Length: 66
Length: 208
Image (cartoon, rainbow over all chains, first blue to last red):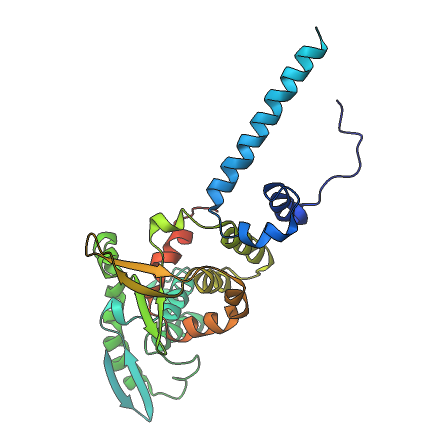
């Protein structure tokens, strides 16, 4: 999928909020408590989700191509 | 500390690294970036630079020695010259002198070890990155980092090992409200051995 034609992207200034949003699963009431969690642990979790999403995407594509 | 009065001015010259204030260390680091030869010192700019360094180690504001006569200034320079040896400490002996905690105005502040600096919370990282981005001065950001990462705390004794445990208060909104107060407090009263455990992390070039 060619994304280069897209004009809208998340501004850099919202990166941190984007991270909190993902970690809290969209629940704003959890943002405060998330700030107390170890940063490396948060990065590891986001990395896990990214790899897991890619893995399931590959399975889905493989099933579609059968 | 060598303390004396001369020509109506109070001089406080540190004799050990434990007596050196953090702002003196930072200002000296900034001033010493300009390499000076003996010939440079004989120029007006060079001499002015040298006066700033002497004022710094005497704990005086810039311009305090303007009216001092040359002979008195030369004698003062000799007394201050030993301060340059404070920085000759090698890293291993310096590490032994760094404090895990210190008290200013009856509040106990707890620093972080190198290991703890690698275990910062998401809130601490977000605040550091945001303030780094908004900062215009590399000196000012060091005071900001210190104020964020060195917080009030307590010392407890581990019931199993008998070792002292240094426990900082958790980072929360109160730390942001108190940031300017703490920054100014550290600027004025903190010693280099109090601040270096945390500041060393940033001066080592490690980027967060």
